[in-house]
Image (tube, rainbow, N blue to C red; front, side, top):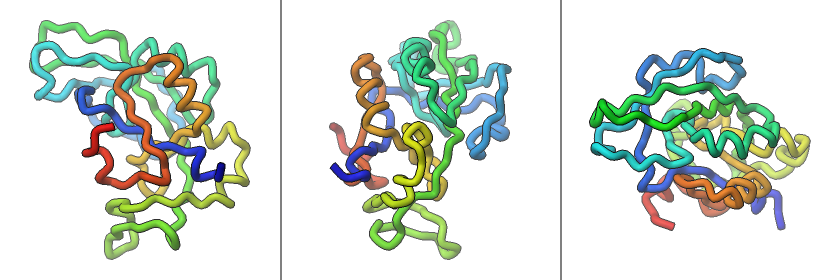
Length: 196
């Protein structure tokens, strides 16, 4: 099994309503720890309806995870991750009380896209707009100790969350809902529109 085969891109399932910020996102997603204990304000997308499908994982610019999933992840002592309390509002159903959620602040970012072998759409300045075929830089990833590559965002495309097979298996064994795992080798920006 190659290094590339050990990694998966994480996205939410189609039945997992999107969450959004209900405040400015500030420095979250900037690639460094914030060590904040102040709750962030999030909201469920308007199209979630009067009874949102509460899942263990909800995408936003980052991710919101359930208290149940946090209890699975926290003992793993993942490098580059913070769990920030979240107050979640449901604009389409103001009387609905959301369960306990946490903003999963994955600040660990690694520059590891193999640009020579990936198929990318680039901006005039060379930034990645979309990925048609993702190839990870295996020699570079091999230089990190494993704990620093169990979960990370692509620095070149921070909306792309990558997990190692070991973390994927722990999440699946816990029966977490709302997450889809795409083998990095098969990932493209259009993969989220394909049901698995």
